[in-house]
Length: 271
Image (cartoon, helix red, strand yellow):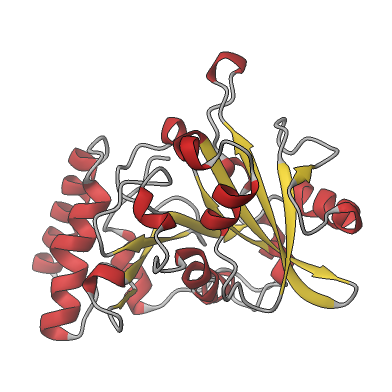
């Protein structure tokens, strides 16, 4: 018992030292999660490592320490962030599709299966992140954002267009995608191909994917904001998420598993 307590204390101390290290997530995934999965079939401190398509195309899922339900999807390849040209390669993995599949970890922590429009995925611009390893935030959406998207869903089409109301005080472009899963709809490529100038300026953009329902059919609303530091907008799509997951409070208390509790002491992403 004393040994276990000491190990946890050392892990937390290491986490604190690395909190300002922009390579902390990469060190955890590359140095711990991937080797653990390869050698022992144990991805800890991650909850999952998927290497079916090889390390260069795989991903890890890690519990973020902030909030009861937030997880991060992190490529097992060295990819700095949204600005990386590798994300727009013809054969690039659809990391957002994998992140949506990983929403079940949020459900587990919430203690129930959440409606699809309660859930969201977000990646921040280069100005609103602290980590230089691509990571997609998986968590509940803010209740006010969900309600606004429900109200305006009928006005969102299949081409990028401004969303009428601001979200969390910022103006977003929006596009709809149909389907239960993201499939071939890769938000990085939809942004680069659909918004003028985005391909040459990806680092200033932030993307948020929200589950949605259109006329009774499942789909997604994808949101894009462009950072404008002079106007105080750092391009933090994560601000549309609720890391306290208020939408789950009317259900069961957040649950946990042995693997999740181990991973909670692994890393805190500071975005």
